[in-house]
Length: 123
Image (cartoon, rainbow, N blue to C red):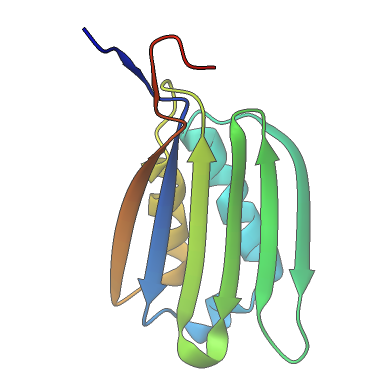
């Protein structure tokens, strides 16, 4: 019998038709990501956020369980949001929900990838 082990889950969220002002608000993006991380059961251990000139934000929350990252394009109304967690006790959808509340996308897509899938005995 083959037993499969999953080391992590990587969620890729694409948010289209977002509020351009919200996509350019570094303080609100950082706050929403922090709130989403806490709501998701993730433990924040570090952060880096950067505002581009003339517009756009990139940011990463390092969490004990892995990371959350965002990159925004206000001129296109688009945000790319990733959540990677190696804990089965977390719910990355909390991050997505909080960011969607802030950015108000007209549409979105979500892809979940299982990471580190191994057969029993593999290291």
